[in-house]
Image 1 (cartoon, rainbow, N blue to C red):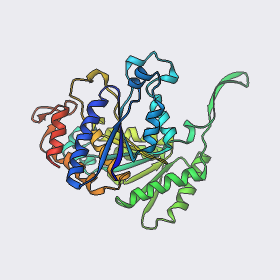
Image 2: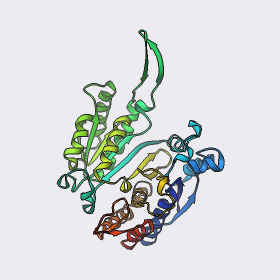
Image 3: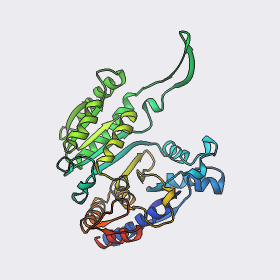
Image 4: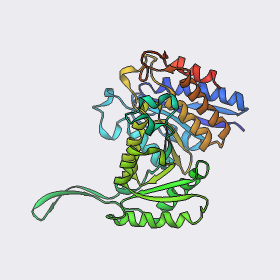
Length: 355
């Protein structure tokens, strides 16, 4: 039976970059004899304009029934004055909850052709190939909170950080399984010298590690990890951490490659998983045909790897991207004198040609 992929273009450049990724998926399907079918659904500001909600029920239901979800981007200043509960970004939160998206995988792999774009020295960046596995539905972001209360004669606010053993076990297992298909090393990041939740986190990860004797486990405090990402990022294979620390570290790591237009991500779910580039909807360039599609194309490769177990096809797409870059193709966000300037369609065709 054909595998079903729900495509949600979203807002801004979303339709342009998802169209590119689908073109590449179709070429990969032809090359590797894969049966894939696509269903398009609305979410974000586009859905709000059509249906009065950023996440229509039929979009969520289609995603639940799919083998994977390819997502573009949502948001834009057009919807800045919409009621907060109906803002385009609520679509992502609704999908996380509805699909049980408990983990975010953020790979950072710097192609040799792109080391010059990093803010770090080239000798530090060459060879960087890591994945951050971030817990996505727990921790301080989802704990109890108080916006304002009187306490000892003054006003205060608070947020509660908490994790349960099953939550940590689930994300740790995903990290170890990810390391098994990579280089076999997990770095668990916490603040166990200060936080009780981090001590439970560290203890639980160590217990899970007993079932993965073939994978090396190291522990780092979050402040040290942040520093190490800047001074020696090549030491990392898989980094696993909680929601708050993962939010911060994954954004720091994304900068290592020099352009967020190149960065894919996966949100792994209990029902299905969602794949999207990390950049926004870029409404200022929407419709101009100049958006960088590579982050979305690489997100499609992750869909093949993690949802469809098509590792060979996933690697072929990633290799094709590297070859297109090595040939000198650059979209506007990366172009400078001496390279071949590509619009969205040209970059997509350069990748397809290398498949």
